[in-house]
Amino acid sequence: DRLAASCPGSRAPFPASAMTHVFAPFNPHAFRVQLRSDGRLRKDASSKSSSSKPRTASNPRSRRSPIVAFKNPFANDAEKAKKGAESVGDGVKKAAEDTAKGAKGWWDKEVVGAKNAMDRRAGQTPGKDVYTDLRCTLEESVLGGEVKVSYPRRVICPTCDGKGRLPQTFIDCDKCENNCGLVTKECVATVTVPPGVNSGSTLRLRGEGDQGAPSDGDLYVKVAAENVNKGGIIRRQGADLYTDVVVRYPRRGEDTSVRVRTVEGDWGNLKVASDAKIGSALRIAGRGAPTAPGGSTRGDHFFVITKIAFDEDVVKARDQTTNEGSDE
Image (cartoon, rainbow, N blue to C red):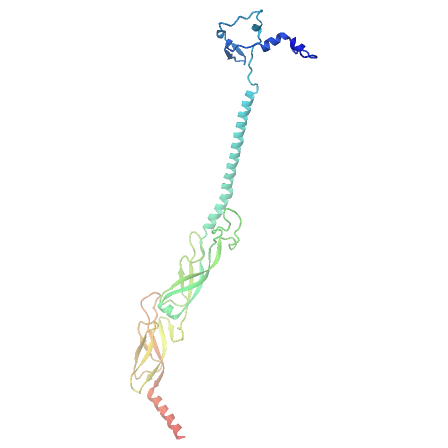
């Protein structure tokens, strides 16, 4: 009532007797609080203090309203919501992982698998053979040697590594020829010409053709050998060699000699009989071309007499010419 009187124009929201319950001091030692299954607090009688007064009608403090403690009504819901969110998060995460795994599996199986299959087919194409011509001199065809030949060869494209597509894509390589994984390159090979090779023979160089897998192609070289050496001094017919010579006799009836050169470049003198005739030949055995390519048996080198001259006739003709000039 005093509270209502101190607030003119207002009415006390509850009787003054209730104020005693609200503002009454509370002795914390009077109770031992335990939580009941229904959420309320219960007082243990054994926890009463020996100095506490019994509750009577004359003791207003004994008419306190029971103290009640409530659990958070949203605690269970919040916990359930949290667990639900976690489960939903785990589900979403698992679903995302499954989707990613499925996408990766599809990519590996369908896309990468198809690409690998095509790569295997591209990588299992053997290289093709290449054909070219080689011209060699008479000395090279007779004695053999190493000759360099230039020819176009298709090699693995360095841009796509022979796949015909850019790495890790299905984009066609614009450096290849028709996306075959090969590019044409001018190459030089060293051809070992065997002694005695014949014109028209074909030499084979393994692995010097177009590149491929599991093996490269071969290079076939068709030899075009000269039958006459430079200057036209030596001619070849089969395994034999021929050279034209002019024989000069100092005097009639006497033997003489002629200086000749072999295919190896050696010089020497051959004896010529006094009765030699035009068309006859002087022979050096075993100085011709090999009878079989790479063989050790060789033909002969013939020096054919195409002209015979006598020095005494030359002297007589000169003297005669001199005498006729003096007479005039």
